[in-house]
Length: 355
Image 1: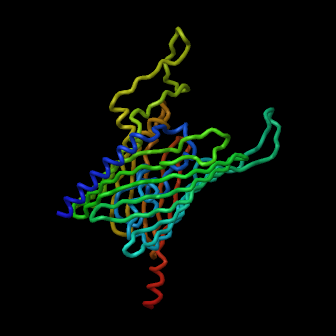
Image 2: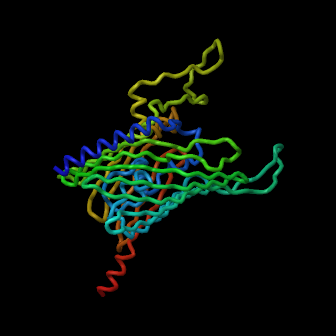
Image 3: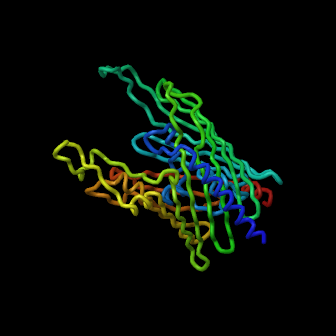
């Protein structure tokens, strides 16, 4: 009876969240500020195609993708995630969480990105000095459970400094998830970056990178696999765009302009799909692989697509410290590499007291 009621509650909330998403800003990349919020925030998420699984584990960075995934296994966990991106760009995520009895789970996190050093020049190219550019967020999360259904919210305060330009903003992440440990099934829905700039760069208000997602995970009962399928950017159906610099463009001889390409319904649908697979050898070691179709279609070269859109990584527990590595292929020039460390200090305190 409780399980059936929880499922009905979950479906009711999903319907409400879908209604909110339909009435929210539907723009995506290229028209938003604070777009670094779309970057995967841990090695595990990177390895799984850029999206988290719905497992009730201690992967604290999952909260950045769905606040309802904040659970009691994350109590007193401290997490550090660092990515060497392209050139001298670095970004990462730092977080911790704690539980309050009869109240719920609370989390605090910081997302940051450092774009590196730049040469400052005037409009005719004279060097005037140098400047830095960086952005970060301060996140406060809360989550609780009702039977097998979890719900959560994250409040994010956004800060951006690009040379002499400054911007701030406030956003909310809303999420719900349902897990059935007996069947290994998980469902989750989230609305990310619902908010607005508070202070604009130069008087023009830019939207935040709002996104609606739905995901389903399944752990096999008699095999060490967990599969996750994520449907992302549900707020906008057509994610295709025309690359005017593509070598495969056909030119209209009468106008001299590229002929607009047509895309199949299947292609448009697949651009919303990302796949992740975990091979769960033991509690202390697992391997992860992922595939993101949108990244492959947008970032691969027509002549040599290679393994663009594919990702992989592993998780390893060594002496009470969880270590993860994730690698994603975004360009033929090289991979991005992300490293994650997480630890529960209480594990060491217990060992000391028991000794």
